[in-house]
Image 1 (cartoon, rainbow, N blue to C red):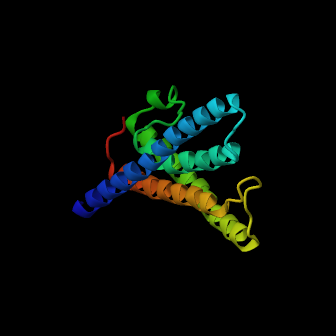
Image 2 (image 1 turned 90 degrees about the vertical axis):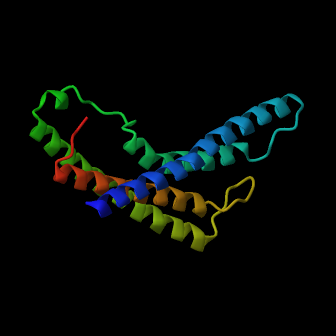
Length: 164
């Protein structure tokens, strides 16, 4: 029991930390876009803004997945599930965790494979010539961390923890 609580706390702490990277990326995008718009008025746009915003967006999505799940911030249709008895909700949550684990496990695995192929081919962005593979690895890391969070939630469901 103690080791499960430690695992849960460690996963939550790690999710919080990488979510801060996503939050920083949101602020960075906002500042970069603002600077680009202002500089465009003086005919000096920032080269590669579109690419940098896209790369940062991949970090925002990948690095906020686990935190969003922990905070129950994802979109869920709970109208029918809320009306089920406690055991029915547990079963639905277990099925959801298993399916989500499979989906994001495949996403992480395929993202690693794709990032490796991008690295081998030397793929870079067109304007600023930035390598693209690190950002794909970022999505893989975010999806893998979500898988760990889903596994912790699945264990919690099997242990009979309360459901909100």
